[in-house]
Length: 442
Image (cartoon, rainbow, N blue to C red):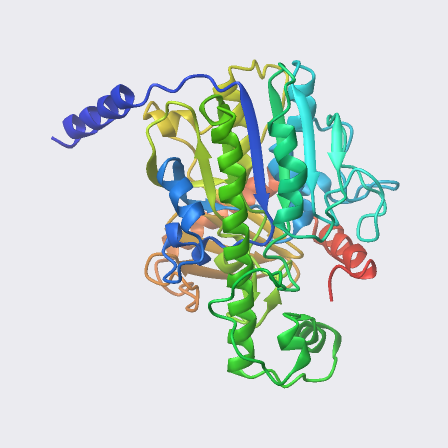
């Protein structure tokens, strides 16, 4: 009976969904956006009505995770479908960029006649040298790479992006948009009407939405800034205000797509490179952990003609590039990807590897949708979490069913052997030291 129901379900999906090959691609990366602060992913606050509406007409992957909790190398992974270890230990002049030996989505599409453009507010994802990435290294494959919005909000990115959408150029286009809302400091513009971050906290760093004094205490032995639970909540409130501001700007971007008729021939993807910690596990900001507060990220994919629905199977940010190329009908022979096209999952024609892998500093993780194993290469320790029974990952289940531990440890060991030998803990730490020396990390 189960098999009959499964077959009927697959036939239903295939009959209702008749995707037409998209002509264009827009990849939206929202820096530092936790999935669990969006209504579509279960957040109680109405931070994201427009993201939620977009999710309702898209394929929404509720079990997606990023491969690192820091922009470098998470963004590199998204743009290339290669695990973060591929970007560690790079020599000068571009230690944080994408190596010439690894083709990015922009390069692949440019070689096939696409008009390629990027608008990035990120101080890390840059085409030319900047303070936080003096080696640049992200511009290859882009005809234009607009960096004028560095550290500026979503309205600036839209002002540069919308004319590119309205361009009369007849070629298919690939547009990469990197928004910095809600990355800290959490400073929604004065024009944004606040709903949650109200009042005037006593401490200036709290009013300024600046979590760095807390990070300075935690990581650099700095003075205790005396942050209270109310102060932390105000920082969270400001973070949510920034999400709400981006959400309004997303509506403007999508309106431009609809008004030009582009939405009906364009694949639109919305993802994030990582989340944000608010002391849930003793950490602040990002680049520190592999808990879901840092790596559980939104993944929305709108395809022309595709029936929208929610898919809860575990997927990775690494799957973005092969999925897009598959639906574009582009031959990927000769290209190397470490992610998978999600098309078999979307169309019910096959199953995918359920494992998700992550790395940050000395930490490595393997998850399967139900459980997550985190291994600290430096300490040699393990922690196991039941993501269904304990979604906030507060209880180590390592002393429970040892079969789960051994199974995930074997998957993690195999992945480490395939991607980075015994684990490049020192190279990963060196990458963090470089970001710290540049002032990007505390």
